[in-house]
Amino acid sequence: MAGVPERLITIRTRTVLKIVLAIMAVWAVLRVVSVARGVLVWVLIALFLALALNPLVDLLQRRAIRSRGLATAVTFAIVLAGVAAIGATFIPTLVDQVNSFVRQLPNYVAQLTAGEGRLGFLEREYRVVARVREAVAERGAAGLLGFSGAALAVTKGVINVIVATVTIVFVTFFMLLEGRAWIERSLGLLPVGSRERWRAVGRDVYRTIGGYVTGNLLISLVAGVVSTLVLLLAGVPYAVALGLLVAILDLIPLAGATLAAVIVTTVAFLDSLQAGIIVLVFFVVYQQLENHVLQPLVYGRTVQLSPLVVLVAVLVGAELAGVLGALGAIPIAGTIQVFLRDWLAHRRPSAEDEALEAPLPPPELGTA
Image: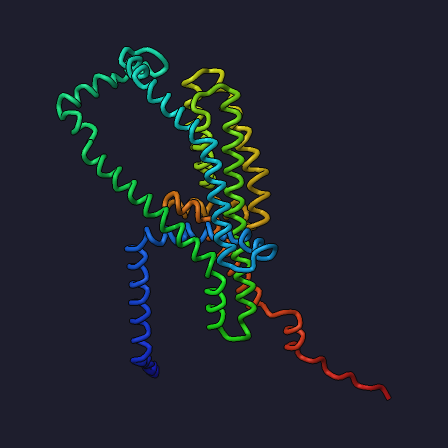
């Protein structure tokens, strides 16, 4: 039996260097993302806000204001005026309800200590007050509650929120002001024949993300307003504060509305059995309406994703980046879908190309 000839595979030095450089580049990108994760989150939030506000800027440019910068400034002024109006309407009531809750805290503590009221079972069955007293006797109040660490954490949290808010506002403004120019510069780097293709892809991505952001804000606004009205009619205390909580949590796809329903229903049951039943029935009915009418209507027209893809995307996003990952999962999945559709559309040959590439039929022989 003849020996099998040896096959030598030669790898050029340039190929090895390219592979090494690619690995180093991927490592560097992952390292930058890991270190600057907070800043990247701010940029993504600013991007979503810019996409949500851009239709108003374009409308002002078409109808009244020619300057992009002035239209952006007017848009910011309108949004800030709207936020101020909402704050003037709700904040006094919210502050009053929080103050009322603080004034009622001693009564709640007294009832809990005596084992009375709706929270008395915590002392009767679990001896919560006795355990707290034992912990205070052993470690002191500061050791039990961690006052110094808590104060430092709260201070750092407040500073981070202020810095994040200011940064997001300025980044959003500059994205609205210069975003279109950045896109045109990026398209200018591409070959002339492919610019229209990627411009169309950009429009589809913009439509997907912008529609999702606007629709999600609208759905959350509806949830907060309707919840507040129901809580007021049911006589539940702190209705405005709880309605605001519902609106904020409803921004989180799938899990946010359920979490808000659990919290608000618990507060309603602590107030009265009748109010708890009313609120529970309302949230069950409203969530069915939101899940089967509002969300399919909004996401079906904008993101165009199936419910299964939405569920998987939200679960993966929440696992990777928590609440922010869940918020950004649907638009990211919609963006990936846009790129896949474009890739498949240009990968498959068109009917005209297939007709040109098909072999010609043999010529027919004439009859004598």
